[in-house]
Image 1 (cartoon, rainbow, N blue to C red):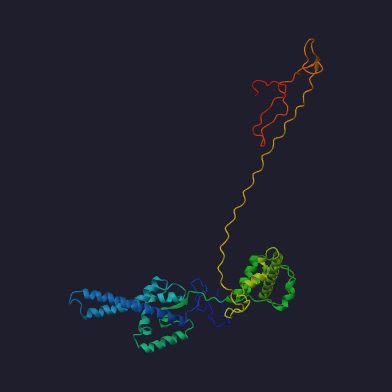
Image 2 (image 1 turned 90 degrees about the horizontal axis):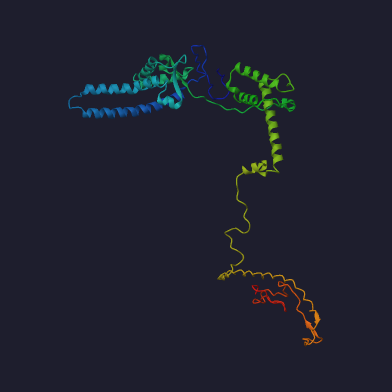
Length: 409
């Protein structure tokens, strides 16, 4: 699909006018004199280097040959053969085996093709090279006049062809696309009120992306393809939006209004989400993002500048006192051992009962009564002293009047 020439100064794409054998117009751009001159200069530089290399190799071979074997005719024949290889063989070999591109043409982005867009053949490449050597470059026949004639032919031809292209039935085209980016058109003020009432809930993101790509690249399409594509896109957009637009405007204007309103609502929704999340996550605040894009400046200096003398005289130098040695913490006091509870006191034994003394016996005590030792269990003890901190050598003492039990000393 070809495109019509745009209003800008850039060359239009598809001005080569190539039609394939299937009657399909090829979307390519013809190479003009500027790009072709640059490619020729690069090729001439490479040819000069190649000629120097061939001359050096030939000189070494001639120097190694026996004396008298190489005469003047042989030297001229070798010189002619080298010139043919450099001037004719160089373009023919590269155009035949490198898809119509010499190193200079490949660097600039050019290619030699037939008038029907087919790859260039060996006969065509040889014809172009022979005509170029004889008339154009280096122009063995009337060099200056042939150069002027070749430049005039290239400037007047609609496809920028030279004499060799006219004879061989070829032309040079660009292989790289000249892309021109244009902004998406904005919404016209007439449709502003209608766009605010649109229901865009069913507008698919993929369809919106297709509309944006069409609006950004519609200048590259030619009629009637450009209008047909716009009508198809608007039919899809109108089926998922409401209400219908006011009549009387072209489809690209409606598409631009819908896309602009969709972007406007998306910006407001994003701003509301940021405002809601700002108290919870301050890093998402839009003002912080805007401030981060500002250039970083040094904070204002506080106090006198660094070059002004200080108003307060410096304090005299004093030797600092040595640091005090660290104090050891006081040893922890051991708690007093717990005191054992006092043993239960055994009640004192009852007073011994007195019985009358036998007749004729002297009473042991006044009153004629003999004391009787009461029967006390052997286990009973009174005021048993236990060893303690104040009496470390205390022992258990038996109760008065009770014999100690063997084995319980």
